[in-house]
Length: 266
Image (cartoon, rainbow, N blue to C red; front, side, top):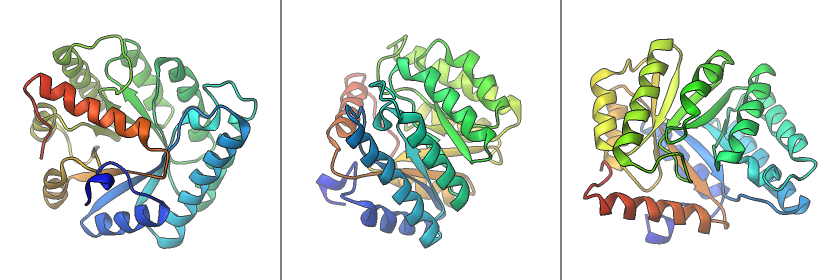
């Protein structure tokens, strides 16, 4: 993979091709059309169309994949009037095509709307997932609600601004959430490249309940190895032209852990 394509691919065609390769290795994919914080209806409409197009490609090619959705891309953060209608069209498309929708968690102000949207999607019969950020104080209380609603949580540390920035504290919170999810007996996902957390998962978790998610551009050896060992593994594949904000978060993540003398799993 060339350096400009480490974190994101140029278009849906390239993302689908990457997904086919990953599926052949036993790895499920999460396709993520890039774009966030739409400021007007036209931009939000384009985002909605991109999400539905990704679902169409997944269904047409029979890919083992779901689609990640950012509510801010649909206009939720800007208070655009029709963001819920756009999400409804995406949920309907997913239900019709049997393609899952996974709502990405963004800033703290978006948590409430994201949970409500995921609950509504799950109640409609659409396969629904939702990111849960360990660095937020509210996540311990949100998790049982999410599980009861039939939503598949994807536990992550968090890549925006949380209630704590302490690395060890976030690790502890993540493990507490994972332990609670395991105790529930319901399927869930984790998204982490932290060797300590991956080690705990491999040594503790019931592989029938958990899916281990990784970003494109990181942990390639670990993804393939875990899939070969019988773990359920997913790769998050972003694509599109609006990549600056997403790639900026990825580089900040690497700098932050390097400052702690740490590195992600290989």
